[in-house]
Image 1 (cartoon, rainbow, N blue to C red):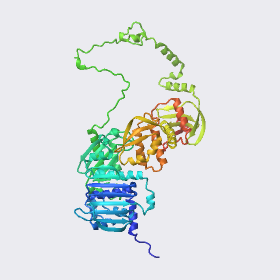
Image 2 (image 1 turned 180 degrees about the vertical axis):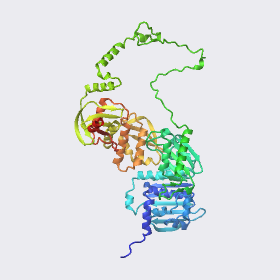
Image 3 (image 1 turned 30 degrees about the horizontal axis):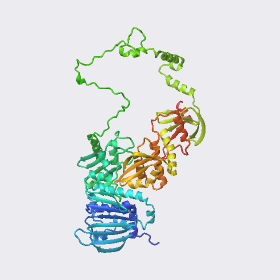
Length: 634
């Protein structure tokens, strides 16, 4: 038998490695910009065409490369960052694997122009699919200029599965933002198809955050700062009142490197327990500085998963620091009592009186308004009550008569009142015809039911063939409205209502491509928005039937949901928009409904095709079987 094991060619090995390191255009931006930071650049300019699919250009004013280094940089495992394994535990740079440039050159056409500081002549090198095509001297500015064209030109399957330009651009800007947030001393510019998207001068950290996400965020942040022998933690956390369900800006950095860390995220969110509603989140920008020997960044090629040697201790330090910051800035919300409709009670300024000068008050301790004896004369202040003191007697006599006729009141301590009330309800049934879906047996039964009952303003109870059906009123209304909104979106017949005073809404550069992707669907819903520059948009019109809702919050939630899901197919975006509107416009838990309203809601629910579940898969109704009810009383 002949030998079958052989070494892979370098070109194939590099393409395999590129599958881990270079996943999309945003990966190229990350690697090239981090290399520029490691090269000591003070200004970095990034330009993309067609969301990086056609061209990516990164220009820096770093220290540049020599002719030999420029050629060797594209070899796999060639790096200037480390010399031996021990250097992995003292990393002060972003890159160290020596895989990025080799991976990029394996799946794209790359041109590099670079010149060392102080040199008059630089080097130009052109590589296509790991093959060096040109290398020659050239006059160019100091630093490096990388041009990456036709990404994945030789891996058609990978290129085919790239997302839309808006989605890819959003991912590119997200990577760009992470690097900009951790390097405030470096100035950055970003252009898309020749249009400037971001221009970030070198500035302090808080101002850099404002430059990326808008000045409005400034008033929402609290300063976080704690220094221990184990770790230094600084940055900013959001105020509890700024919590939101979607769109919170959440960033962890360690030693100048962006990271994802669910364990530390839990420490931070637990510090907000009882301060923000369940399911909502706050923004935070937290920076850790630790001894490089106490962390391991060599977990994954993307270097966003990082292991800490003293993870539990740092968890406790972070949690305590956040709680201390919230307490120091009095971030605990005060109780806001609802005083609407309460009468104004004037306060007496006690400073105007001495103890002997307090206004005199008088009362008659023997007065009883329910005493009909003429011997008791009510005070003058109760004269109006005295004149009508017998008006309650017929009502009382009627109540006594009703009580004597009802056997439910004979035994003290029973549930006589409640049962009597239920019996009275059953004596006056309101007969209606309903078509009921049995969730368990998947059958339709015609029922003649009495009026529906509402439990705690949240659930509707109604009798069905197999037992007792319980319906979540909010989810039922969401299910109904969703279908209506979908019809309006697809028919493009939604009426828009012009706003007298347009609302303003701000989006970060990473969110703007997502907004542009769903603009047509927003318009079909009835939203009319126009750009004002700088990420600010004016809401000029809204759907005609969303009175009382916040248009700014609705549009923001839609953009955040589309960004999280990465919707590519238009129908998916339409579904997401319809669901967002349905949730916002649906009746809420706790809203008391009349029997007619409950009838309409139940009838509307069973008129839809799938009444059992909401569009996002949550249960709308359930049936408590008659057999199970009987077992409870055995």
